[in-house]
Amino acid sequence: MVLAQSKPGYEEPLYHCLKSNDYWLYVSQCLGTPKCLATYGIPAGKEKEFEEFISKLGELDQICYVNFFWSTCIHNVNTTSTWFDNVSEEWTFPWDSWLKEVQTNHGELPYMLKESQGYVQKADWIDIMILKELEKNCTIKLKEIAKMLNISSQRVKYHFANHVIKEQMFEGPQILAEHYKGLSPDTYFFIFTFKNHENFTKFTHSLMNKPFARAMGKVYGKNQLFVRIYLPRQQLRNFIEALSRLVRIGFLETYEYVIEDLARTQRQTISYEFFKDNNWEYYHKKYLEKLQSTVEQFAMRV
Image 1 (cartoon, rainbow, N blue to C red):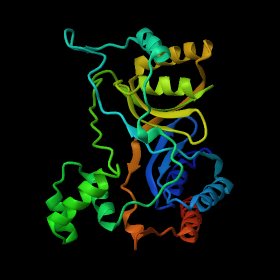
Image 2 (image 1 turned 90 degrees about the vertical axis):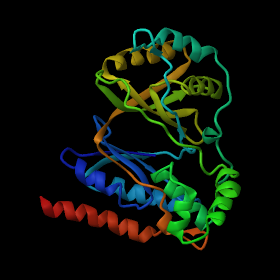
Image 3 (image 1 turned 60 degrees about the vertical axis):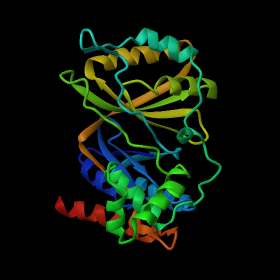
């Protein structure tokens, strides 16, 4: 996960610079500071190269700072009708009840939020092709994927059952609904910091069935949780107040957030085109050159 701040007037170059590394998964401009956030899926073993890429980005004259952290996989939260009143047909926001739940509930973290000791390459080329098609359309039929790959349906079904599902490569579909219609909702990116792992777990578990949580991940080596929050604007103040109460009682150490500009957001699938001979190809020099070229192109426009 990368958070970056450009100098005024250079938000556009920053946005494109973040995409200079072909392993980007998600890039969004933000309203406020920082100006952009991005998610990458970097091949295991290429951490130092990626850190150098981020370092070079931060050295550019147009960039104020760049911050990044390694995370677990991201756990998606499907839209739920919790907090919806079927009688009045309106959304309710019982923040006081949620505060009690946060402090008292217990539960296991989903495996996506548990720190792994390492990332072993379990997928082969067919598995990667299945996964990228599922990312594009999770309702696609396996026989359609087989036709695309020009292999038998039986072979695709075997890989899906014995590799993709058995090895937990596919978490499941994310179901999103544009609820809060008429309430002027916004999408926020929050980072929460906790004093201990117990509080981290309680807070995280309380979000698993909430309509305002969309996706979350854990920062490696720290009791920090980042969450994509979807809330009506009028409820943001109430949510912040609830968080402030958690800080005052010592449950939550701190929090910070930015507003995402969804009109300036892009996402793409896993970088399947760089998976060859059961290995990920990572063109470090190319990404550094592309970064410099992107900056020069925007400089010529001025």
